[in-house]
Each structure stands twice: as structure tokens, then as C-alpha cells.
Length: 120
Image 1 (cartoon, rainbow, N blue to C red):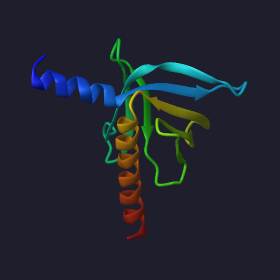
Image 2: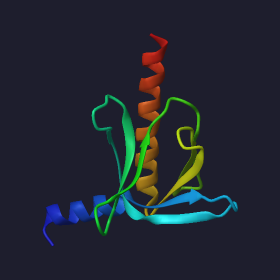
Image 3: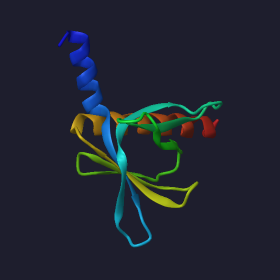
Image 4: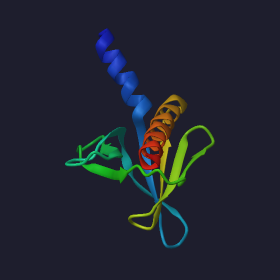
């Protein structure tokens, strides 16, 4: 495996997540496994979390990051929140601790930027 392939494989494992949604019975339903990125939402200046299915490249999750204090980091590998747009509890369970920290830092940076803009 070449160096570029190794770094891509490392990056993919860092970003690899399972998406969970809390059902009406209070149990977490597995929505699938994919790779998470923070990117601009299509046709918008808003940043969001995208999770793309690792098998069929379908979108598992698309969530606009909000400045509200809704996100929680649990243990070292889980980020959860209540999505205000869909009134549902969601969670990302990361394969790697470093991937969770990386994504958490991105969410926090986006939130600070949104809070700064709204204060102006």
C-alpha cells in the first residue's frame, strides 16, 4: 500500500461512524455505517455534518450545525444531540477516538463562528 493510500485509509477509519436515531421506544436504532465530514450544505453558507454510507454512497445523515448548545460528547467516541428541525435524538459512534475529537473540534469551531456572527 502506497503512502497516499495508507493516509487515505487512516483518514477513512478516523471518520468512520455508525449513525443512531432514538426511536419512540427509547432504543437506539442503527441507521448505518459511513464516513462523516463537515462541509457546506448545498446552496447555502451553512455548515453541516454529512454522513455518507460506506457501501452505497447514499446520504445517511445531513444535519445543519447550529450555534445552540445541543451537542454532547460522551466518553471518547460518541457525539449526540437533539435535532431541532426533526425533533429527534441522534448519535454518531466513532470507530476511532481521534476521529471523534477531530469532528467535535470542527463542530465547536463552527458554533463559535456562528455565535460570533450573530453577536455582530
